[in-house]
Image 1 (cartoon, rainbow, N blue to C red):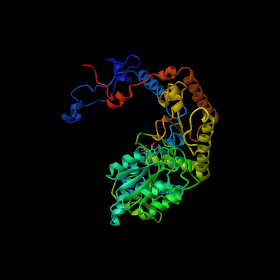
Image 2: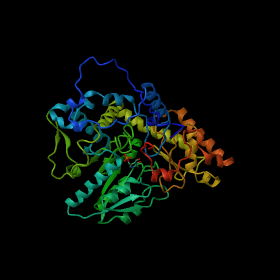
Image 3: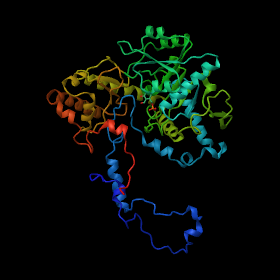
Image 4: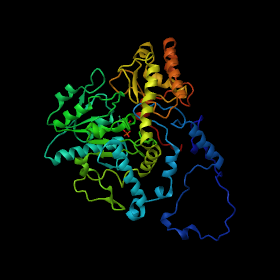
Amino acid sequence: MNAAFPLIFEKDRPGRKGFSLPPCDVPLKPLEELLPQECLRKSRLDLPRLSEVDVVRHYTALSRRNYGVDSGFYPLGSCTMKYNPKINEDVAALAGFASIHPLQGDPTYQGALELLYNMEQCLKEITGMERYSFQTVAGAHGELTGLLIILAYHRSRGEKRNRVLIPDSAHGTNPATVTMTGCEVLQLPSNDKGLVDTATLKAHLDEKTAALMLTNPNTLGLFEKDILEISRLVHEAGGLLYYDGANLNAIMGHCRPGDMGFDVVHLNLHKTFSTPHGSGGPGSGPLGVTARLESFLPYPVTAKDGDRFFLDYQRPRSIGKVHSFFGNFGVVVKAYTYIRMMGARGLKQASDDAVLNANYLLNCLKDIYHVPYRGPCKHEFVLSAKLQKKRGAGAGDIAKALLDYGLHPPTVYFPLIVEEALMIEPTETENKETLDHFVEALKEIAAEIETDPVKIKGAPYSTPVRRLDEVLAARKPVVRWKKEP
Ligand SMILES: Cc1ncc(COP(=O)(O)O)c(C=O)c1O
């Protein structure tokens, strides 16, 4: 029994119910005559018995304990937690989108196919790729599918390449994905500016190189200015270039992965294109490729013949399917709505504002927290709390202390190459007052650490639960309530 906040099952009271209806005046047959015997319940369905008002209050109270972009600032670096416009939800909820089934047949959902087709044209224009698949339902899923395509491409040329180069600043999903494909990871050390060092890269390229995986701007929020040289070197060695699109929010309308020389791109619609994040689902990580890889994409892809849209299954070189039907279609509808609402100029402005907001924060904080790699940054930046750590409270403590200001903490301890990392991504949707509140909070916390670090180590003080045992929570999560006998 959780006395402070009982579960809905613990509020169960025999006899209570959430409806009241007048007695039925239609003669009813006994259930036994309506349903086969084996389909009838033998015992009561063990659902909690409550009145409607109890249920509403229970879930309203729960919702108040939640924190999301609709509650406040969410500067989680690398995750682009921008506001999700509600118009996206309205459009995705239209019956013509929400109530269709992929098996009902092409002629009956021409509008949905047209949307997928149009979305593909938008993403092609934004990224400079040749074709897209929407089957991939998260960034990491895009990475896996993209690498499988790269490997299929090398195999089709009779080449056995099984090494993938990844900078040491990369997101953890990059090496994890490589390992899942059975390839070998080769970690590239970043140079003192936090960028790929072309000489080091060159030294590691050979006939085993399948690909280089890169984000640009990288996870330090810095633009890989040598990208054209990097691309030339990788291609000359016979490898391909994979673009982790998690950071596309910094460059929309300014430059395109395709023009930088990338061969495969995944996008995170739940980052750049304002759809809700959903722990790998319901997300969407569309995968784009250049012309030479197009035939390897998962099938089916959307195609157009005159005025008719259809699903093209005739793809003998395809790596196969990686998800049912065409991925999380509803998420694509939301992202398409966002793109059409913003227009080309709006998307460029979004990137401009994301970069402006990040640089504003960086400049406000650079004298308080250590900046390991000097800006200007793109859409995010990384601070180090190593000075604060020496004084008694580090990045994790600062993150907890921010909760008492009603703020979501930034990403901490990533990228791994920065000691006591605080990775901050404000996004373009925040106003100056919100940014100033965040700066003030971080300044106050830093000042508090100088005088009373123990207090910061005890934070948070105002949240429903204080410090959890994170190891126990990860190793032995209790996610199901069991009735006491
Ligand atoms: C740089 C980077 N790459 C890849 C991913 C994985 O994306 P997803 O969470 O959509 O699987 C993330 C997610 O935060 C990321 O920040």
